[in-house]
Amino acid sequence: MVRAEGIYKYFYGKKKGYTVKACDNVTIHIPPGKTLGLVGESGCGKTTLGRIILGLIKPDRGEVFFENTKITSFREKELRPMRKNFQMIFQDSRSAFNPRMRVYDALKEAAVLHLDMKVRIIKEYINQLIDRVNLHRGLLYNYIGNLSGGEVKRLDILRAIMISPKFIIADEPLSPLDISMQSQIVNLLMEIQQKKKITMMFISHDLRMVRIISHRVAVMYLGKIVEVASKTVIGENPLHPYTKFLWKPKSTDIVLKFPDKGCVYKRSCELFQKRGFPSVCLEKEPEMREVEKGHWVACHFIK
Ligand SMILES: Nc1ncnc2c1ncn2[C@@H]1O[C@H](COP(=O)(O)OP(=O)(O)OP(=O)(O)O)[C@@H](O)[C@H]1O
Ligand code: SF4
Ligand SMILES: [Mg+2]
Image (cartoon, rainbow, N blue to C red; front, top):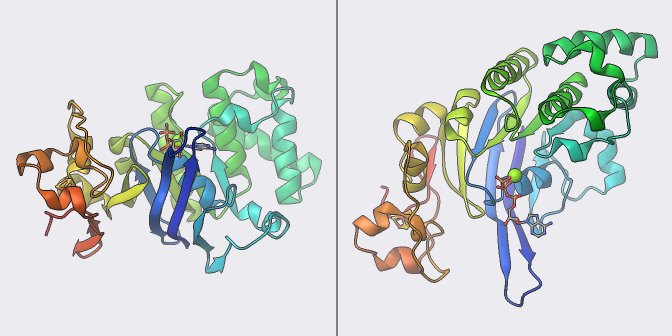
């Protein structure tokens, strides 16, 4: 089980008074063997949250628990032996590899570090797995720097799944792939997740894709979670105006100027406009409330 509680992470710009609230009191729970989809627009804080959960960056405040062990207080030395349990498929996969390394050597390095396998067995193991992500074996001795974006992404996925981790964060794992490759990777991730009972966080800006692969979906906007529900409920009964907006095939994002106080979504909120700009949205931040069992939403007007 993975839990992040009350996570804050602010970044401060050089310009005085400029603050980016990448995570602003974020709490999420992922039960063992389940997938949580995290969806939200570019820059809302998804990657930052993922990196905090895996201990790659420290939060300003808040705690992360992995199987009830509080890992936020661990130093890198203490975290290292646990790292084989959790893996990240990086949004920018290329930066996660040394371009001057050969594909086989990068995979072998991960296998030796985490799997304690003999070299002869590693080769066989890699040969079996490479077909699963649709990379042809001829690429094994190529330099990573020469691979295409889609090939590097599939290599990153392969490296993450080959060590059989208990928890994977897949950060936009489909973005550089074409449609047919996207469906192959979605199917592969779902199959592995179900067979090996891996706990997963699947990050994307595409609610439709997130809904296919997840058991529960959390919707994030400007550093805050605004709605959490099962994938069925998020599709059939989305309540937060932002979640509804994400479902629309084409919508225009109206940006209005209001002070920072109050609800994080007010500048683009259709419901706020329809209701005649009620002052409660401008003054008071809505809290997450459970409106039906397991369905949480942060909006003053959803009862
Ligand atoms: N190291 C950093 N220094 C300063 N600002 C940062 C840093 N990392 C992230 N940010 C800012 O924090 C905000 C959240 O970034 P993050 O990468 O988490 O968003 P995201 O939801 O993953 O976006 P995308 O969908 O584009 O990947 C952004 O405004 C980003 O510019
Ligand atoms: S609290 Fe107000 S601004 Fe925020 S989502 Fe609800 S109606 Fe929109
Ligand atoms: Mg990101």
